[in-house]
Length: 72
Image (cartoon, rainbow, N blue to C red; front, side):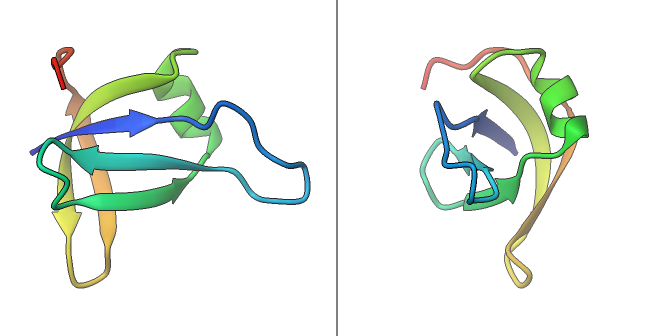
């Protein structure tokens, strides 16, 4: 599946920042920690698309590759 990852515009220093990852129809919606690897993959962009695998039982997502830009 393809998911959009969005970084927050800003956050409070006393809160661990999280990004949002979700699919087009909204059936997958996961908050993920912002790691150095994620920052690197985002290439300084506020949002980007990735191919991903989602585990609904654990509500976890794993990115497998960058996806082309989507119009949603």
